[in-house]
Image (spheres, rainbow, N blue to C red):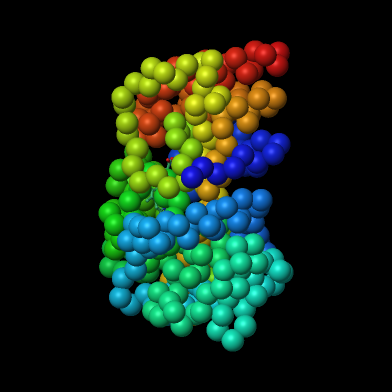
Length: 305
Ligand code: HEM
């Protein structure tokens, strides 16, 4: 399944500076905005149900010892939804009812895997990070919409190991991120944005980084319909009781032609790609359609001039 395009174009434009920045890019988060809800909610929750029933092992995983933190996430989520998004769910006598999908869940059916239920209530993917000897490591996740990574390959790994394939991460971000995790306060949640341009609009993608095979069928003329902007709005908050950190990922996918009528954003995106080190372009699999993309964005700018 693919995400539906937002009417009016992309909601977020993390490339708007026109520069490429390998930075944490954290901004303070008001918890009333922790969970993002839009018109795709019913479709995406239904898609999560399908993935969780057809390939549960690929989209949910947890390690022993994470049970209490999983329950803490579920309780925080139920409380936040009831207070900040009234009407989306009803929670009574151990049963959660989801308004749009009509589905009801009994908490007791999820046993020690409360994060599995939590993930079914929101469009976000949920990753639980637990401190250990090598820093914070991934101990549980409900991950239905991975951006080209495989949960099974990352479970149990610390931040540095998780990001091993990411060009420049170890040198530029590894230590600052580890420090940030150590000092994150429960009352100071944050958010950040990540962007990619992909040749596939699917929300569930488990591979595709570092591809260099040329995409000859994508041209400057058709790139607006053959390429997609994928934005991840990520949040981090410390769980006050367990001390673990919850990482949420909310994914938005728009066809590149959503930038038509926005020559300013087309110019920024073109600038950010031109500014990006070769290794990162390679990691992000931009090389296969780099020229077509540049030509398309240039044409959007010229058309507006
Ligand atoms: C301060 C927090 C974080 C920063 C600054 C950060 C930074 C990044 C960056 C720059 C990338 C490359 C994305 C791209 O441009 O395509 C990336 C990829 C990724 N991040 Fe993070 N990240 C953070 C937190 C996390 C957390 C908590 C997880 C836990 C699951 C995570 C999992 C991943 C994964 C799985 C990838 C893809 C790696 C691959 O290709 O195998 N990140 N991250």
